Image (tube, rainbow, N blue to C red; front, top):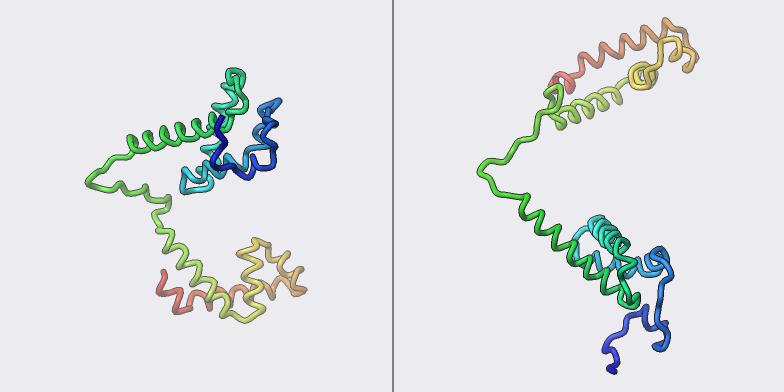
Length: 185
């Protein structure tokens, strides 16, 4: 009998005369998941892909659990399942991807507006709103961003409904005349 050249940290804690047996699949997964996850991470570049890979390999192991006679060789079985699954994924990915002369363009979004243009408009609108006087800004935000009625806005700010109407009207007029918003439209 030869002695192992390299022992892992998990095997170092267990005396050589004692062998690890796992009464159930769940106990095996609880005990060995961190080590197996490190192995899966070494096979993939993405931690999420490693978790998926380990999950698939553990599923294959669970299906074969009753057929595995030597539970001392479980790590080797799961590592082989990890490697085979990763190889299969790599082969499938290679078959599904192919070179073409022209890159496909994504379908345009409903409304036809570019998301970058929509974001530029939102940014310009917020800068214009921030230039309004505090009271007008509060009323515009409550009316149009918080979607409150004129009465709710008036009650919240402690003013009359007429004050809300006139202040919002003046604020919208300033926004219509804002030079930055004129450029975006």
